[in-house]
Amino acid sequence: MKKSKDSCSLDSCQLCRLCLKDWLPAVEAHRKNIHYRKGEVIFSEGQEVQGIYFVHEGSVKIHKHWGEDKELIVRFAKKGDIFGHRGFGADKHYPISATAMEPLTVCYMEQDFFYSTLKTNTNYLFQLMLFYAEELQESEKNMRNLAHMPVKGRLANALLKLEHLFGLTEEGFININISRQDIASYTGTTYETVFRLLTEFTQENLIKTDGKSIALLEKDKLETLTHVS
Image (tube, rainbow, N blue to C red; front, side, top):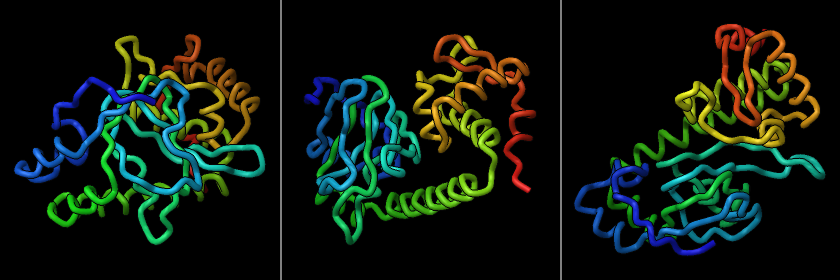
């Protein structure tokens, strides 16, 4: 971790897009741009909350312990997204961890300033409340899928969500360099199962792969696999 010389333009992150324009000078004065290397932990589960993060460049996986030696990826954050907000509340400790998936630059704000921002910017507070509600609904769907959806459907669902979140490269591949282990942690299964099912999907011409890159060829058929009876 190191402070970055790069400075964001105050127009890309969730906060800067939705807060009062007159509040932007205060954001400029209180933010810190910090750079993390690929694989570096931004904060760990159980660590005391100090502030809030917004992705300026790069991507982040948000994950938590699941079982004795496993992790479950609960969401990803890309450019402009907020993370670290799950630590706000009565228990001032993070219930999740955050790790850089690639070279990462964040805008960091201390907790007290962020609380002042919420009290001053009612529109942003309202939009953040809606974001929390949507995130809760998505978490409930994920728990249902882990309990009731076959792993083949969970993998298809994960691939569709990754394409929706990160978009496509010019070559038509999902625009994120994600490891098979991270896909397994996002799907709630093992590396070996993901490797086997991706091979099956490739043989069935549902996807194509090039190293770690994945392109979805038959999204309608993948969507069919996600249906839970």
